[in-house]
Length: 369
Image 1: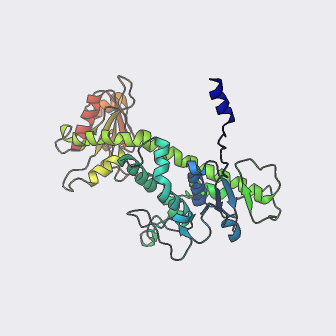
Image 2 (image 1 turned 90 degrees about the vertical axis):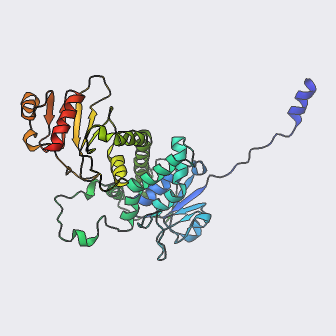
Image 3 (image 1 turned 45 degrees about the vertical axis):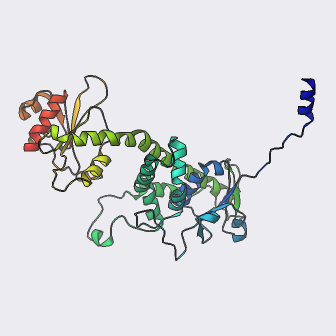
């Protein structure tokens, strides 16, 4: 035993090889939502955690970087170069036409790995592919389009439209743009590059250091927004897919034409309903009303909701009857002829009843009115 211990203590002990964290490069100066998100996404991966960020436009410094994002005039994934500003660049997400920004490029190559890592799903699973495409459709594509100056609508469709109010100030891209402004520093920048670590440089009077700190704040804003979307789609939206499909397949049990959908618990149904309807025969009637309990608590009141004409529309396919709108309780029950009514919104997009059967009866009457 003593001999063995001696050998162990005198044997060469393998030394752990120290490797420097990968250096990520992006441009300094005015920053946008796309590279702010791209940097955050990279740093979610083990390869880039930890990593150091270098913000510069100096080509000689960018050549020293392991990965370069949104600068450098080169897109070559094999060399970890992800710029989209080249005149010849035309890469888009699968089955999409929107040209990618740096956020879209990083997401294209690393999105599935990030999703699998954050959800503990198999990277090759259908669920990861579904989430990958969903997050692009609902989050990343708008960032790509905004950075590339692509309008939501063709100009021919908006030439005669006037916005009722300005909503540009509440977008993530606008909030990131706001972070470019620093009214506390008026001096001219003293450097053209700055190596950024995730430490607070607010005490540093150097304007470049202050700019880098604001960039990291923008990156956190974009990244945490992405993660909240991913978490919601993984924990709520994706499990609801099978629930909505089961209810959709049973819709003819509620109405001869399949116009009423019923859930036994609150369910995020809109996205999935439109998807299943789009794959059904055009001759099939559209769902007009969706019924569900207000909560999972036994004895909870029920809701009847009119289906919007499209996912983002405030217009309903068939609002609840005009004679019911704005009424409550006994007055509503007397007018509708349905016991247990609670309310119908003034616009007719939603109503309530004290029981499932009451909500079903409201729906049965509404589809025929």
